Length: 323
Image 1 (cartoon, rainbow, N blue to C red):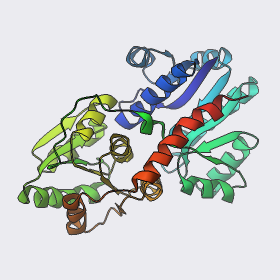
Image 2: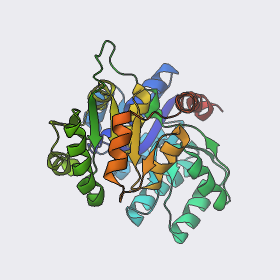
Image 3: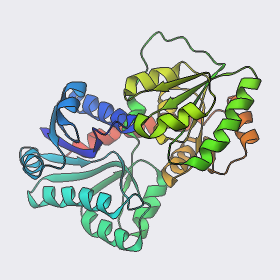
Image 4: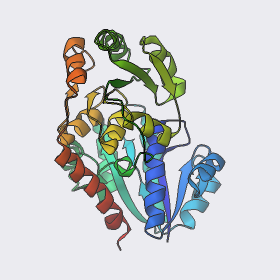
């Protein structure tokens, strides 16, 4: 069975590349042939040992869907129009094309929203009759408001594992900013200074280098790690004692690695993940002292809840591939 996967792949966002890595590994484990729609298909094919096609090339996209039996739309936060209406139009267009070709379509471990009223109507029309698996409970609520029933899965990146044998330094804190959330970056500078004054070593982690490098360099951390490699990011997180993440996948990879974390909720998907995991989350206008204390205390999530999220993520592949 060939499975096409539609997402934000090939753009150098380590979080989405972590999803791509997890999905391709799990599909292969289940005997399927993954075909990722990517901005850089040759690079994606090399990185994950899979088939890939150019996501914006009409002929390549049509050909990829035509030779696949299933389309997984996701993971990630694809079905939203906060970024732009064109983003939503593209992903819904891929879904509609696959349906016209008679392919089975599964909305796969996405976050749904934020959506405008018009965007909500378009999503409801496109998803009616499909299997919809989302990665957080807030998305289930969004779907219900649209008249769509969904199932709870989990972010595929939760299934990734750190490289064996890593040494953990519990005195190290990873801080992962997001370049376009400037309010949070300014406060993270204070958090970084507080932590260093208390003897912690701070690594600023840029998970989308083109966007996050200036913010990461501005924090005053002991070191800056800029990477597009999801395994390198996961290993750095696994070797630390706490993670503060504005980027969603900083906290998701922390959960995968068993490292305590706190999220900065610039978007409902961060709040949704932290709420499901029983982990602290704060708004972008947070109190730096409070967040610093959580990092110093290594405030833990509900690890039983995290384990259940991982189990749901694993089960979602079986459900998505079932006839």
